[in-house]
Amino acid sequence: MLVDDRRVNACLTLAVMHQGARVATIEGLARGEQLHPLQQAFIDHDGLQCGYCTPGQLMSGVACIAEGHTGSREEIREWMSGNLCRCGAYTNIVSAIEQTAKEA
Amino acid sequence: MHPFAFSRVSTVTAALNAGARYGRYIAGGTTLVDLMRETVERPAHVVDINGLPYKDITVTRQGLHVGSLVRMSELAAHPEVRATYPLLSQALELGASAQLRNMASIGGNIMQRPRCPYFRDVHSACNRRDPGSGCDARHGDNRMQAILGTSTHCVATHPSDLAVALVALDAVIQVRGLDGTRSIPVQDFFLRPGDTLQDEHSLRPGEPITSLTVPAGAHTRRSGYLKVRDRQSYEFALASAAVALDIRGGVVRGARVAVGGVATVPWRLPKVEEALVGKRPGRRTWTDAAALAAEGAVPLSENAFKVRLVERTVRRQLMTIGGQ
Image (cartoon, rainbow over all chains, first blue to last red; front, side, top):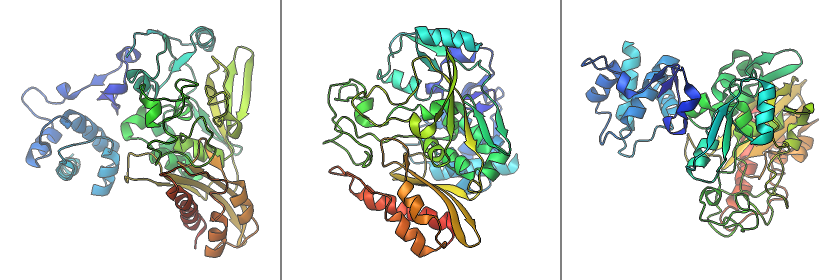
């Protein structure tokens, strides 16, 4: 998730420590029925299988693009490492982020 | 997770008073919350110190001054740190993940607890977690464990990459106590596993780290960090090397070398440094010096490979930093 626009691990975050902070989770990514471009790219590139890791991949991917760590597929892989996908959709996740970064 | 009380402090005095009474500060929380979830850590009261004013990075001609609450990602990305202390930026960015680096503080990074699987499993014997219970790692799954600085009580490696870089660069840790401030050279900060395993560092109870300083020098610009691991990213080191060299007039004038992933504390290599100073840069010099990297190693049943690995890691990083 994003806390004040920085990506952090929700599982290691105590909510009480972020009173008043701007918190963005996957639920806030789409505008109503309008998907975020990265959500659409995940569909276009088949960037998920079981979907378990997808909320984390998306939030981390949004931050990765905002940080500008998308200069190459290699750079995307390094800056997305830590977001694990047991189904192995990594190649397609990188493609989705690469495309979204180019269009942003 | 066990229930705990939580409070927040915004002044140093309030922090010191709370620390004297409860003792557990939280900044980024990436170690503490993790271990609380595993019930390895069971603090009754956690004190949030993020309101304290230890958040500045200053680079002067004397050196680098970093507040303890600066985040790993902030220090790594600081333009002057990247240019003048590349070893620090590299050590930071080769550790953890982008999310963790956004959370983890510099002070907390050097306070990390062991990553040994037996330390993290409350059903295993671990002298660090439960002094006197024994060490299941010693004759267990010990491939990742240390070969240097070990004792019969504990063989866990120190997990921090940043700490290896700080030891190489002779950093000094500033702490604040009820009696005032004091400075601890980073080499004296980390304690090897002796008879009092509860002492992993030389902080006194309730003493927060306020900042650390890295002295300037001709060696800091020509420096870097090499981390060798089972996976290319998001993994702890099997062996790592922090190297900083001062080369002028075709001669090595000064050398700082420390290694990680192989020792119970960040491990400086004075004999390797002595073997470098006064020599001409080149393959022969790097190879001869690196051969001393594992001196004193005591391998366990599954980690003898680390002896050669740490020698080669140091050699390769000397080649990268010093030229071939």
